[in-house]
Image (cartoon, rainbow, N blue to C red; front, side, top):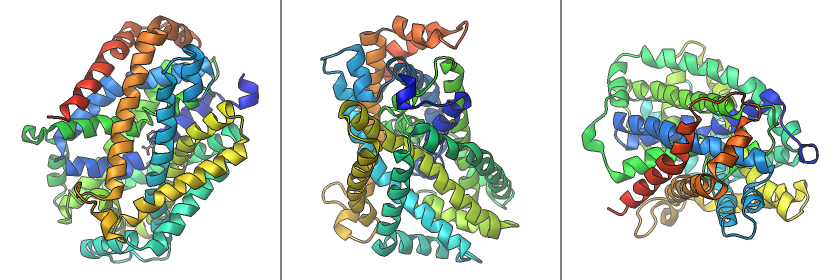
Length: 447
Ligand code: TRP
């Protein structure tokens, strides 16, 4: 089973899964969602969601994947053939198209910021100019559309080559270097005058900010950041060897991903408050703040371009994992070739990305949708990046907790894990905590 589909090497899985998890979700989406939701309280609820809701689902997904050795649709079908459970897999495949589309728009902008910084366009930049630059760049289709297409093309190229050849290699060097630059940014941001106000905003929970949407956003952020709820981790789990310890792997992935997100907040908020920028600037936030920060940093002229390049690659290891879901489905279930699947699915995602790209200012209708008064991009992030992942995660937890049964999952988990402690905690979480909290939070949206 492992040989003809390809599989990860031992350390390869942790690297690839961490590569999937760490990306724009941590550095772009997390800080601006914290900002829009008023700071510290969001962070607390996000952390609680990671531990109590998302981690149990992460372990459920990789276990399901490794046991069945299949894509999400195939995985549900293998355990409960001929039942509607496979619809959960189809929802994941559909989410794959949709998330890839808007994610690649932002990844394209990141790549664009690499070109801008490497050509010295951010030298002596002020906060006002940084904001104008971002607006001008994101609202210009002549930049956005080619970058979107380029980014998807690179993703397709890697996925075409299969998991061990393409996906593993990218994750190996990237993470340590990216981590190093984040430390530098952290030091610079924390030593700016007035940084403390940013820390206060970021860490001090303001209970009056509590709203159903904040809780949903926080939980959705936990799923998005850990690549959960659409079967990415099922698919990656399907390439994992039986010798691997799934529990410790999942622990590492979750800790690392959450650590990077928290770091991003410690970089962005002190800088925002110190420079008198807007903490609720939405998706532009990272692109407004970082050029200013690099400009104020010794060696920033070198670290800035390096950072945007590495972040583009981090985004690439994430888009690869998103595209891999529909591709694994097409290869396993439809018996298409890998190459044809990757090209076709990538092209469709690129087309869906066009309105998202144009909704950043070039087309007024898309930038401010009738009735909803949000942009097409914001709508797509909310529907596919938050709601659909939460629904997917809900059903994955239900499936493992009640249809497959935790006892069977535990037999799979025990392989490679040696003696297991605290497993009853996971069983309890997957049967009761995750599904009930997800349901409650989704229902909360109607009040
Ligand atoms: N987790 C990635 C990030 O934070 C994005 C991502 C990759 C993702 N695969 C996913 C999000 C699957 C949702 C579902 O950038």
